[in-house]
Length: 256
Image (tube, rainbow, N blue to C red):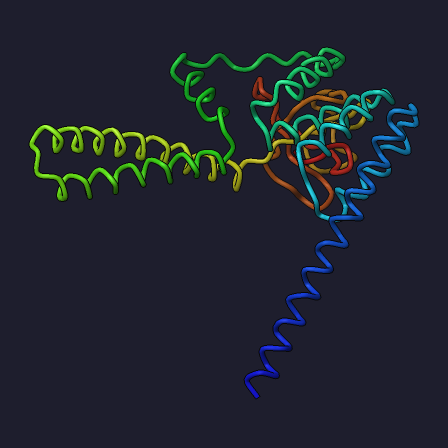
């Protein structure tokens, strides 16, 4: 009876592995196909191939970066910036992504100046942007390991001078653990509660309330990055970096 159960589990595992391998092979084929279309300057077909991969639930810096490039070539700056931002979210330090995102942002019409920030806040934001949440998780884990090893060495070794080194190492590990843990907590809280979006409509009228009959608050254009604060039916409440607030139809903006 037990052997039959084990055989079933093994067969189920093999079926899952085969399914994953088949799915990965399909995505790899679509990716290569998209690259070939891009080289042939058939950008719409390249976008279609890359989008199929994204729609299947797969995401990577390379996919988003290539999608951004393809949309940029078709003149759809809003979508280009959207996918460059998605790529940057996965790989904050990727120089190619940052460079192309900067170039694409130069094509936007809106020039919204951020509200002035105290220099310590600017420093903090730069620190947060160094790594993704996964990156800060790894750093926190490394600091934790250093702390545990230092404590172990302190009780294991007998030399006073070596114990001092263990204490100093442990204190440094603890300090960096607190810092990285705090940054990770803020990072996770932002990812869960704060959503950013990109305006993809060429020209969009931001309304004072979530109603097509409402008065216009201001006008935005494709490529503008906004904070998404709320949603009512098919309307999204957006906030600009300069503090302006209004409502946009959901189809005019995409979540990063």
